[in-house]
Length: 365
Image 1 (tube, rainbow, N blue to C red):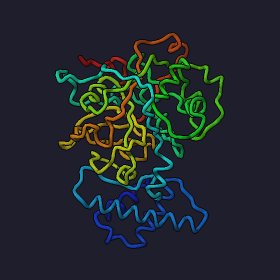
Image 2 (image 1 turned 30 degrees about the horizontal axis):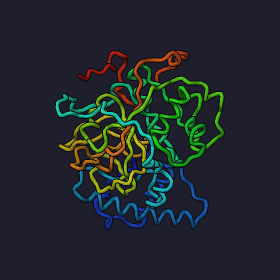
Image 3 (image 1 turned 135 degrees about the vertical axis):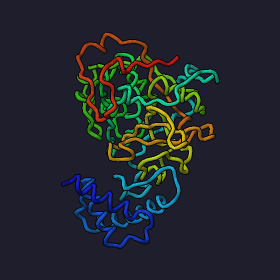
């Protein structure tokens, strides 16, 4: 029944998405009621429900007007369709830029010298190095999901095992709240602690819980260090992503990001970094280069939880500032405690995941 409802709503939305003038009040209310069911939202307070409906209606108008134009990406009724942009920003954007006096590990490991031969495209999902999309829910914890995803990726590359790791441990034992944070500080904490637990053992609660000291001692996956990609260089960022998934901060404070559905995002966005994501690949689509970005809003947002952000934007900082503050964990070889537990490989929803470790090997000169 739920799938039939979603199919009907999709048809209704697409049928009338070219011009808001074609939508009657009845049609908009049908969309809204269906959207509430699809997103498991229920407003018992009639005033609040009416307020949310009016916000939904305004957002729908913006989405329709955008989709009626000639763009490389389309917008849709995401889970944030009844939120104002201010509400979305204050609740779901949680990257805290480092202070100017922070001691950050800069490196030329991935500095592009103009002579390297890099793949035209790469998708770390196809190499089995990306866990299924997760959902931070109403918590400013995007930084934790960004850091964890890049660690999951490098751990798979080095050990051959894809293990879903615990964002909740970072909230409880490092941040001690649901406030904005920084991926580099998350890396530092995990290095100092000597590793991090699995998501299965220390699951995500979307709010702060007192640190579980027993689980803190369960150091299933380790990293050796972390570094920053040479900043404001999309060529260097490409070199880094060719070798491993990379954490990045972007400016996600726009209506277009809030309602992104598919395609290459080329719309206006600033350089005010406020959201942590993970770059898990790059490529080209319909003549437009893009970064393949894993988000933490669940699989029902965007393109099955992903967004393609314009690459080679002719801005040193990259589109939405994506090249301003990229970082990555370093893991040179398996450690003893990486093998203490027999962890099952994560079962995902990607049909193109490899079946064997041999298919996961990378060959980059």
